[in-house]
Image (cartoon, rainbow, N blue to C red; front, side):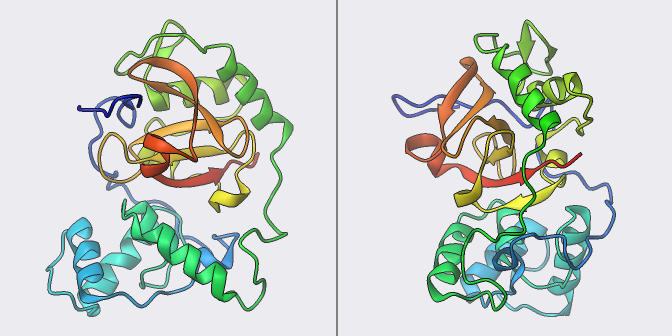
Amino acid sequence: MFVPAGAHAASGGGATVATPPAAAQAPASGSAAANPLLSQPLTLTKTQVRSVQKRLRVRTDGVLGSGTRAAIRRFQKRHKLVVHGKPDVETLRALGLKVADRFEARLTAAGASTSDPNAVPAELPAANDAVLAALASAQTRIGDPYRSGGTQPGGFDCSGLTVWAFKQAGLTLPRTSFQQYSEGVAIPKAAIQAGDLVFFDSAGAGASHVGIATGPTKVISSTTHGVMEHRIDTGYWANHYVGARRITA
């Protein structure tokens, strides 16, 4: 893939997956999104609705009709999001639509959440010792080369690194970055902490690349330049940010 000067190309979402998996996941409960801003239904323009429909592979008529709402509900169930059949920030992010960041900024500025007007709600779970142990394991692999389908020291793809690191801490993650994006709870960008999984669309639409946060602005991930720590708040990676999830054990 072409990468601008100074940027590091990302690996794919773990092996050969090119689109989000179709396998059904358990439906999300009403509390699935820890931040109420992320699950608040949005009003989209016709152009934005068409973008959603295109990603869902339904008729692109720009109308949020019953067929589109049903497709959104199915998508939300698969990805363990709040299920209401309407577009929200987390759904747009899971679909790989960058407009999600603009909506979150507007909602935060307007204090759209009735229960908490801040972007970082107090009820977010804290990172636990096992997750921090997984991060420590990932840090030991900095410098390892990138290898498509790699899941062991000496060669990792992006999700292979996260699976391996979490396994060292006794935690099990699904194999691909798309599947990992359905794990844990959604975390707003402003609340990212060490140990959170952070996702990018640098290898295709949606959560096609994943890394482990070392803090609020950096992650470790296996890029085509190998396992490295890189920033997520500026440049190439900021432009490809999709979302973050906190794994709780």
